[in-house]
Length: 123
Image 1 (spheres, helix red, strand yellow):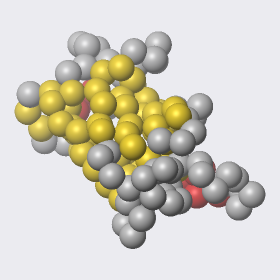
Image 2 (cartoon, helix red, strand yellow):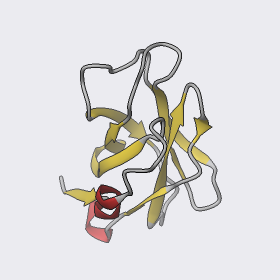
Image 3 (cartoon, one colour):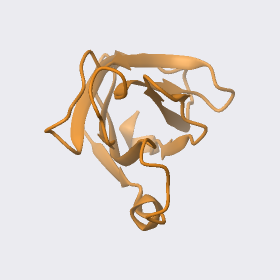
C-alpha cells in the first residue's frame, strides 16, 4: 500500500483578508489500499454552528463528475482543522488526477478545486 500526501502549501499563505467563512483544504492523502481508493482530507473552517459549517466534500474528475462524496453531519467548532476519510471510491481506469471540492452549509460549493495527482505506483 502506497500513500501520497499532497500538502496544499499555497493555501497557507492566503491573505488574512480572505472571507472568514471560506473553507481551506489543509492537506489530502490518496491511497489505494484494496478495493477502491481512500481519501483523507483535512479541512479548516471558521464553523460558527449549525447555520454555518463545512458540511461535506467531494472527489471529482477533471470534468467535474462526482466520484465520491463525504457528508459531514455536524459542525466542528472545537476541532480545527479536522480530518475525515472516504473509502471505497472507484476511479475509472487510467485516472491520473482528481480534485477535492468543499461544501459549506452557508456559502455552498467552493469555487476552488484542489488537485490531487495520482502516482502510477498507487494503482
